[in-house]
Image (tube, rainbow, N blue to C red):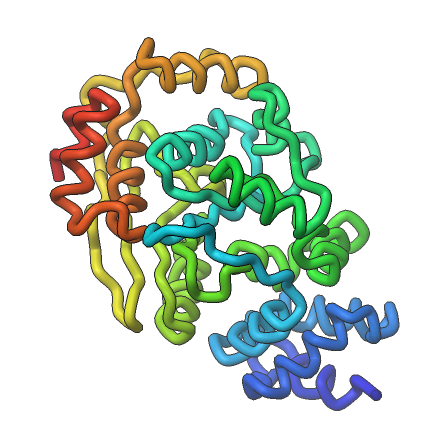
Length: 329
């Protein structure tokens, strides 16, 4: 298979390039995931897409190829949908509170799959914090399924679920720029439509692209502007929390444009030890749960089917966590 015709289409710069059809994009990305594209052509494709920008149809085609090569997990027994938390950015300035959201969901009996990278190029990853909390990563898809079924929480390194895209993600250190894989990994749902995906991005253009993909693909997801790209609501100022389901979008909480009048008590530092210590205190009700994360938790309980409606979900969170601000819009 040759790749010159793909490069010819996408490699004419931001103004002259053409977009691939969804099917062509699927075939091309399948070859990239399978390691079939030679290094020279692979580098050219990555840079061309970086300059041109991916279209919605291209991303849908890429994602279809990723789905075909991602290990399938079974929804744990029960009526509640599992929540999927992709964690690929880690913390640099702010504490990474993705583990807190995961542990709160587990406490409510909502199955949680966290997938991502263990190491984070100088950032504090969810894996680092989980380690401090005594939660180790699964090493295979069988172990992931076992942890979900027995504990209701699993942390899956990306290479245990989708080795091909893990290899493409690793190219950033060689090429110096991000590629399509950095957005695609945040859309991976190994339950293939049976879970609730927490879809987070930082840049408005990527949020818009993710919204288009989620609506087109169906399934259920909560879309938000992540904190440093991580899938938890900024504890100082809530982002918009958007529920994507049945091919439509529903705003559950509007964004707060001003910081909270009284800032929440947050970890004293962003390192894994300080963050894990703070998470334990919140789980033990020694410290209050920040309002934005209480709101996000309510969204998860509603989308997963744990609660019949958002108001009920907010009331449950307020009672169970003592965060009465969760009931406020």
